[in-house]
Image (cartoon, rainbow, N blue to C red; front, side):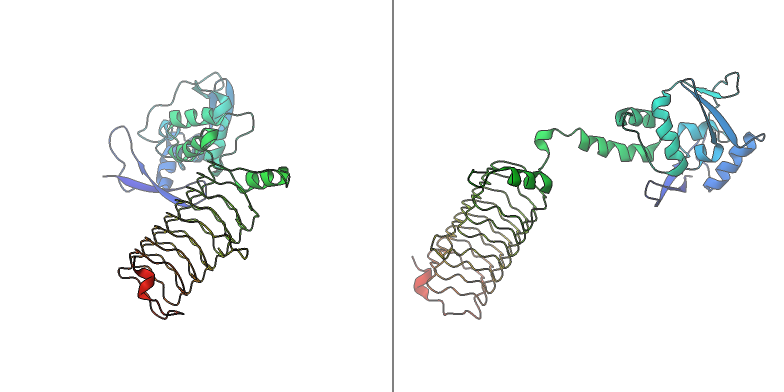
Length: 346
């Protein structure tokens, strides 16, 4: 039968860790009972000396046993556990490991926080944690080191990186983020006018209230990005991926008459509610299940677009080109101006 004993992790939350021995699983005992048994095994004192790589550490049985009852250190000093190692002339138990990496582990067992000095390698601490079986520490260090060791080419740029590039680029110079990884970046309220984002990965970016006027978004991946209330005047977004994106309240109309070109864009399931899209080119775009309620689509080109189940209620489609568009199950109620059949006939 297996017993689970509550132990605290780094954040202080309780977790359950099974307590096992060499012979059988301990039945229905608490961590307090395990500590008491350890103290009974060493009745002279609750303090223990450890000689790790020639350096002496003094700690309590409670520290070694209670937090990680399955670890090698806990089993050395728990009843029915493995036998402790040999002792030196001072009575300290000899452990042939590096003191350099053991000290952060001992402090972690004391207070539940991993604190590592700048000169101490996290890889070394992880190896010692694996050796001693400190599993809660292993689960913290492995993802942290995976992130640190991630190739720099795969790392997305941050808001700070982008702002630094914007500040350092002269106003008259062209700034390109072509093919750059900006996935998940917080880019809200920034001025990106005339910047080239072609082929960039901007999945789940926060671009709300940003100015993207005259930007190149050709084949840019903006899936599930937040562009609410952004300025998208005269952008070039040929075949861009904006599936599931939030484009509520955006402005696409250029007062000079230059059309926003989103030909072939993927806006499946996107929200464009209350956006000004007058004159926009959405030829052969995928607008399945999109929310386009109360949009200004005057003179928009939607020829060949897939508008299946698209909600266009309350929108203005005056003089819009819908020739060859798929309007199956589209919501066309409360239109600002009546939709003429000629608009949808080749």
